[in-house]
Image (tube, rainbow over all chains, first blue to last red; front, side, top):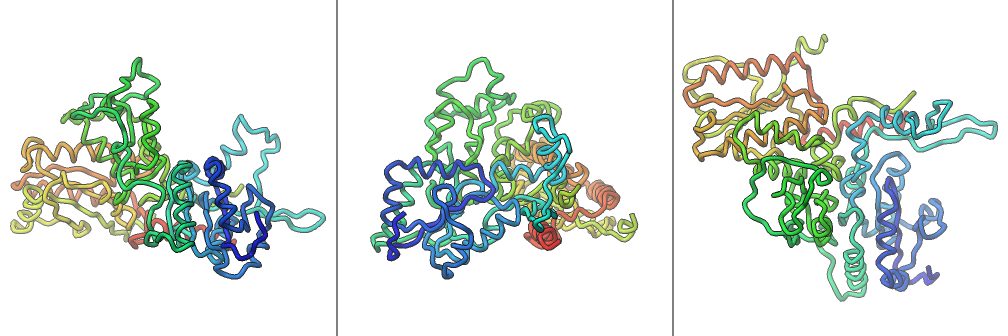
Length: 336
Length: 159
C-alpha cells in the first residue's frame, strides 16, 4: 500500500459474498506483492481501512482496476456497484456471486419474507423478541439506517455495465495470478487485454474436457447421491455411475478439481462458452443419458434428482433466464 | 378474479415439421377452429427443442408453452421424440420447483392426421391457462423477468 501516486489505482470490494474470493486472492502467494508493486491500493475493505467517502472523493475513472466480488442483495451493494463503476476504468465481476449470483442467489427461490423468517426466526437464532432488522429506526440521537433488502439477489451486470467476467467459487488462485500478470503486462504495453465483455481466468470448454475419468456411452438407469453409494469407481465418469455431475455444461478452468478428488462437479465456474441458460443445458445433458423410453420409468429415474432447481441452478439462479422463482418475485418486500 | 374475465393468455407452441405441424396445417385446411392464443413455431423435430426456448418464452412474457411432436415410435428421426419426452419431464420438474403451475407446460403427441386432436388439445390448454390467470414472469419484453424485478427493487429503495 505504497503512497506512490503515479502508480495505477486498484480496488477490491465485497458486496453480498462470503469472503472466499478475498482469500483466493491472498492465496496467490507472492503474486500479491506484484499487485502492491504495480498498483496503488486505494480501497479494499478486507485488507485496509478506507471509507466510502474516500472513493467518492476520487475523480471519475481514477481507479484503473476494480475486482468486484459479491452479488447485489441490498441497496448498499447497489450503491457501491454504481459508485465503483463511475470511478473505475476496468470493472471485473470477480467470482461466481458477481457474475451469476452464486449460492446467495438461491435465496431467489424463496420470498424475502421467508428468507427473514428463516434467518431471524428459526431454532438456530436466539431472537426472543422476534425482531427483524428495520431499514430505519428512531433513537434519541436521531434516525439510524440499515441497507434495504431487495426482493431478489442480482448479479453485478444486472445493475451496472461490466468490462470482464471472472467466474469461479472462488476463482482458482493460479487463474487469478494469470489475470493479474496479464493486466500488469497490458498496463506496461506488453500485452493486449481481451475484448470487453470477455470471460477471463477460465477456459472456453467444459469441465469434462479437463476430467481424466474414462468415458463410454452413457446409459443411466438410476441417479444416486454420492454419499449413498457403497463404492464409487475411481476411474469411471461419475455421471455414468449415476452421480449427478454437472461437468457437461460447466466452464473449465478449475482443472476438474472435484471429479479428480472423487466428488461430482457442482458447477461453480458457471455455464460454458455459448450456453445461454445453465439449467437448460444441464437438463438436456441429463435427459439425453437416461436409458428409458417409458414415461413411468423415466419419472422413477428422475426421482433420483430430488431438488432439480438446486441441482441445475446452484450457482447461477440470479443470472439465469428466469432469474428467480415465482415466490421471490410474487412475494413483495420483506416487512413485518 | 375480474382480470381473468378479459384475460387472453399467450401460449407459445412448438411443433415438429413431420407430424404436429402437419396436424395444425390439416386443422386449417379442414376448417377446424382452435383459439388464436397460440403462436406456433415449427422445428424440424421435437428433439430440437432446447429447454432454453421454453425458459426464454416464459421469461419473455408467455403464459404457457405447448410442446408437440410425433407419437412415440413414429419419429421421423427414429427416437428423438423420446429425448424430447425426457427433457420435458425433467424441465417440468424444475419449473414446478420454481413455482410454476404444471398446467402451463404441456407435451402433446399429434400425428399428421390428427388435426382435430391437436385443435382440441390447444383449446383445453388455453382454457386451463386462462383459468390460472396471467403469469407475468416477464412484462412482455425479452428481459421482462428482470425488468419487473428491478422496478420492484427500485420501489423498495425509494419507499
